[in-house]
Image (cartoon, rainbow, N blue to C red):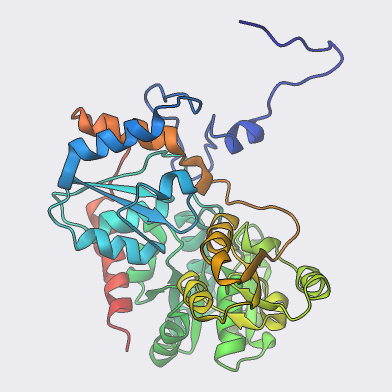
Length: 395
């Protein structure tokens, strides 16, 4: 065994951020991030695939593995179903015979699955430090303070909260408690139409870009109808007059992956690939969405590429794992599919769930050891489910 030698002048100690991105530590400010209570198998273990397969076979119908579209290929291969977060949560609820729901995604997704599944089912997240930067941008305390600001401005009774699925159970519960609903990226317009039938204003949490794009692009509002509430500034950085004049009060949150795409990315890819179709997720910035040819949810992106003619060219503005998987899937049909940005960008928290974490989880469950269970408390679950039920009832 050799030991790396380092120069005394060079500090090569890994920073906390580097360890976090490598999956070696947890950020205490993120969604309940902790290290796994046990020894993970080495990522260089040549038997990892066989170990995962054997543990899954031993568990049989007792386990149901969900794989979000943004997961690594090494993990996706063991998923019983793939999809976006809400589809996967519903799939789990439709499998009551599965005692263990292993959610290969991030924390808020596992919470949603726990809310929708029966009390007999146990939802497991292979790495509890797999959070979501967007969900972390709106805490229960911050949103409660925001509501106080709206109350003091005399408009709270006119405001209907609409929270994106990419939010914590606490935020979903707040939404349900205050008469609001949840939305996904595919039904955001329907949710907002419903909300404006209930009140004059919407508090949209936590993704400002999805809220702004839906209001302006899909509903015909102006950018002036939208104001940005910054939880780190007094009164959200807004005056009472601005709050009273606004139709959409957007939370200052965003997706760390989709927020990277820029108008320069769009212009650059059009120059590099003549005739390219630009297809982006509505979590992208407004100027990116405005410059794109097609805009839609993850499922919309997949279906659009499935229906695309052979030989067509596409630049996709969403997470790289999915883009790369789609490029490989449709290569034989002559469809050229590239990542919108020249800079490689995975979702670092999604990527925390790797094959070693999955193997450790499945083997632990196969041995009768329940690990990394995600369980939402009864009161939070009740109000969060109310908000989700309102979404399911949308026309």
